[in-house]
Length: 422
Image 1 (cartoon, rainbow, N blue to C red):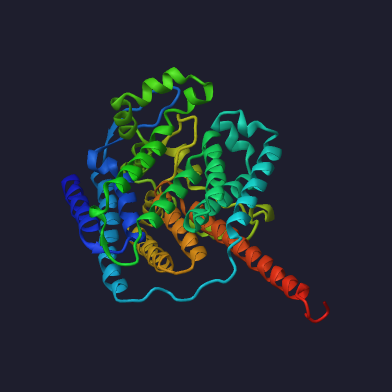
Image 2: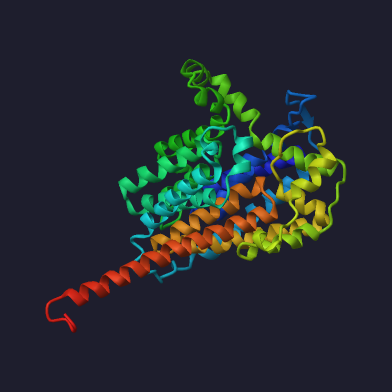
């Protein structure tokens, strides 16, 4: 099974890199699957650390776990081929939103408001404590910070607003410094997607070398930062220099990176034939309701179901695995059904990505980054919640920008000489 998976990955890389096609959500999904399914290529995962076992140990992958990775990867590849043929002969969406020029700064203002709220909510703890403590003290302010910074930075990139880009990246780097790579990585993926995308089909693998250097450097930064947090926060620059100048440190960082522990969840669920039922999936629909937790509708998290049963000695939270969640809840039929829903989402946002409107393209690129990349370490509730929150913040930014422009035009007309009522 492992050799078959390796063969499919090689074929897929050949297709997405060598065939003339537009860069879309399916390409992002395939490369994301290769990254998160690296354990399937290596044949092992790593056990999570615990007080009894502080060292990550290799764990052989179950054949059915690799089969699940294979199913996801094959269906992404097939759907990507079909979508490229369908999309090739269709014009880009022609409609545009008018007067969204201020949306960049609206988003960044929302992010700065979120930053202030985070400081107030946490009493300053968010900027001094370890991530395990920070998670307990951040709330909606932190969500506004992350979403506003992500949307503002991506919009600024598309519109070449240099000051806004600097402000956006500063907010994202500060968020990563307190322990969260999520918004930084999402912004990096969205901007990379927009940077590499071309109006006409191209061979992705034949783009100039500088594109690939920047992409690999960005990816290596996100992966390696996890192992730099401690000396960085301690100000130990000698240790930082020793690590970043050692090639083996980068290799070790990749071979012990998040995918190798995330897929341990899938592996153990398959190995133990752990079943959850579908109640917690239905409860995820509560996230479609605004402020559902405040109304008493708190959904059951997947982690609370599997971790006490399968990892009782682990004293820290483990990342989720949506493919394990679907297999555990409904075996292969539910897993295949959800993969098809996943592919439909990729098609929808890939279509929006071709829009001529910068605000729509920014939204589509971020939605693809959430959906195609971070879905691998998430659960259904988190996926639904992140897409809902992104859409709401994007609507607020676009709506406020349009309303502000309309007020400015009305005021300008009123102040013109000879205007009625002037």
